[in-house]
Length: 415
Image 1 (tube, rainbow, N blue to C red):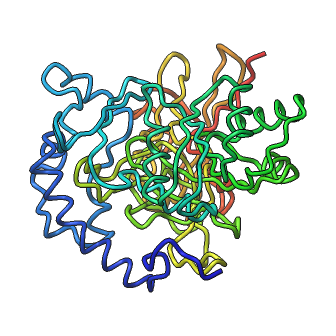
Image 2 (cartoon, rainbow, N blue to C red):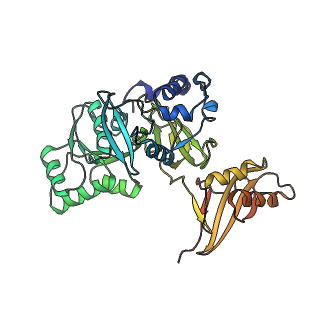
Image 3 (cartoon, helix red, strand yellow):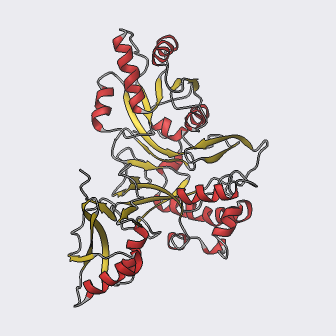
């Protein structure tokens, strides 16, 4: 394959890294000067000092739950809680609401959420009609995909969600080249078309997002003549990663800096280890710095067989927020990290909660290359100090714990 959206996709990786990190100080300064919330979060940070991944990793992570709380706290004076760098008027085209409620601005930039790249990788081209079945009601999903399609030179049918029979009729009449929306709704449309004996031969490709797209569903759709690829995007950040025809992971977008960190911390994990996706966007209108998505993934080794040179992630592997209530007390991944950080012998750890309702037992399993006498007892004391709960400690060999991003495992029986 030699057909790319632009030359950025096939840059030398070192050139990409220089370009991204070279743009980082300016984005830090933009966040500090134009977004009051980040002026507080990044107080005392000198933008010129943040020119490497190591320096970036020292900045605090702002997670989605924290953004929501700060928005709610400052909503009387600013509905965006000080995170938006633009205000109502010509530079802010629309405002959307995500569950929580979190309000997100849409700036005036062409392809504001950068989804044209994902649509192009899915096979869409200028002059085609896209049947867009992402929601247009309050949430930005419909606009996220439409802005990318229009930037690509496509025409968009704003199908939205629901009204399956009308969707089938519109596809049959307008003959779009492809579909954009959730994979489950595409399945419903294809099933309804088959039920009514309505052929939809024009739809040969689809870009799906918003929910899991397992191989079984991908193959089911393919058997009906539609090649489906997926992308990973959020209302806050826009496109983060997208699938290619190789179907080997998701290639990172060119407009974001992505880190994978240990859940509950801001510490990057080694390549291949599962952790939380943390994104710094280069969008000056909504300059999110080290934004914790709450989603788990891992970096894949090597490059995409299509020739794209950016790093790839495995896709969505679960949620990073594993906060669990034990004997009436909340235990957070950050507390587990706090225990591990006290002991240089400790590497990875996993807190396993077992028992039946009302009889909770905690065991902290810790990977340690060296196991000096008394280490387990001292760790147990740290558990009691940091969580106010008693817990056992089991020291295990490095590499013993599963690579699934879990810091807290709830293995209780609720029957």
